[in-house]
Image 1 (spheres, helix red, strand yellow):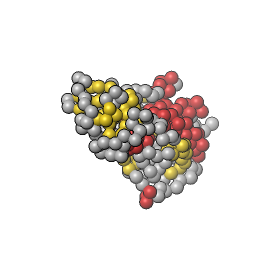
Image 2 (spheres, rainbow, N blue to C red; image 1 turned 90 degrees about the vertical axis):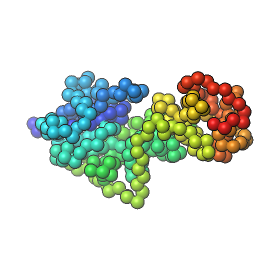
Image 3 (cartoon, helix red, strand yellow; image 1 turned 180 degrees about the vertical axis):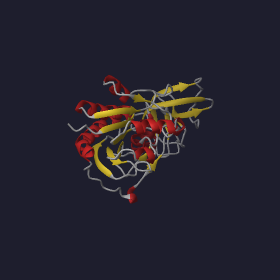
Image 4 (cartoon, rainbow, N blue to C red; image 1 turned 45 degrees about the vertical axis):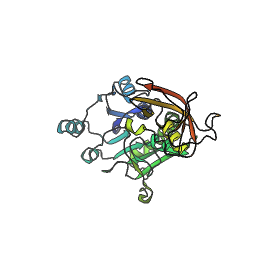
Length: 301
């Protein structure tokens, strides 16, 4: 009997968990998982592929850097025929990609060529996109730039948080991989080059990117809030030495509707309503970090 092709899996997040579980349940020959240790400073609200790997006694590796000679030697010794990467957070060098004769393929959380880079779902929500997706593509030297094998999208609502959008698009990754894995293992998957004229790229987001700029339109601020609200670090505004975390807001509530003022002006305290460039937002779910300052109607924050 011919041995099954050896698959080396790089992955993290619940997308990685679902895709690795699919391969394990199929009985594919997974020779190892490269993943990340959970960051103690990050809220881990998702399943990780290490759970699925350890249940099946698959070797789990968690290097901080995979491009050292020692780790390249380890990967070489695993003799991968095919490399699958799903939400792995580190760049995989072309030297490693070249070790797999059947190629290396990545599952990316957008409808490429749009939203290459990090945190694509958060960025898509922040920009008010109504459709997002998952794309399986060949891995090349540049991030998310390889030819597309398959992709699938889903509609999202204008009030969905990034987590809600993630939950809607999550099944797309498993369906795409399920459609293509046998073709990948046979070296027969069809590939379509990306249209470079339609590329957009966004970098990783930091907590500071959650700062609210009140001189933006209400919809822009609302989209920021829903893109980074819990379980992400959250949107915020600073008032003196205190920080107000804004976990949700409404522009069409009775308190905010038809209200106008200078951007950043406090229009009401109970409920808390702040003026934007084109209207106002009622901050409906908030949390103070630091002492609660004195607020006054007409105050600019």
